Length: 205
Ligand SMILES: C[S@@+](CC[C@H](N)C(=O)[O-])C[C@H]1O[C@@H](n2cnc3c(N)ncnc32)[C@H](O)[C@@H]1O
Image (cartoon, rainbow, N blue to C red; front, side, top):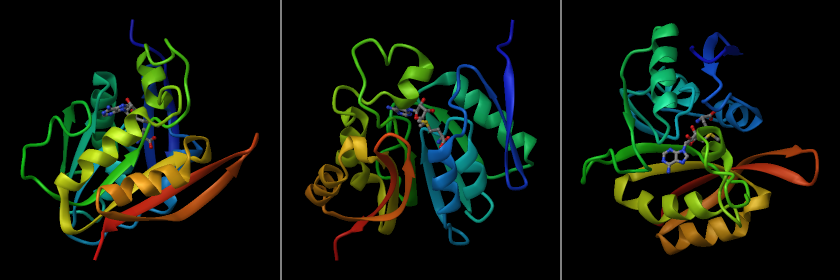
């Protein structure tokens, strides 16, 4: 039996999400509200989930590549692109950059990452893997930061969503080690001493 589907609205766009896929939440909306794509840019949306950021980016980009580890998410994002009449997006299943050929570089790389500290076993379901970042929340974030430079165009930029629970200074330091200069460009306070943080990183000049 297909799992139940919820419909989420963002502006004029609609996203149907089944139980196995991350339902767009505060972090997705903060990301979406601060997403600026220049006309003609080539964009990579890692961890596309419902496809919300890929669909929005595709309104201006010349091409979007959307990737997720979760095969249900890839199917869901593809269906949502169709639902919104969005063209110019290619979808792949893969772990971070594994689906991207060596030498392919993007003007803009987006990642609303799994960034929350988690306990053993919590990343065993597809939904668990959408938020669980290991004991300190940095498991996927740090792997992403150490690999992202190889896929970024010389004038490109990275947008990474995480939370203060993951350590914003640690992320900025990790970007610096990868020769990228990172700054916080948007924040949103949540209950219980957590703030969502959208970080932009660019090659050091
Ligand atoms: C917080 S959700 C964000 C979904 C969507 N981008 C949004 O903003 O609503 C994180 C997504 O990353 C995916 N993901 C987790 N680890 C991944 C990895 N190593 N490589 C690719 N995708 C991954 C999850 O399956 C999930 O869809």
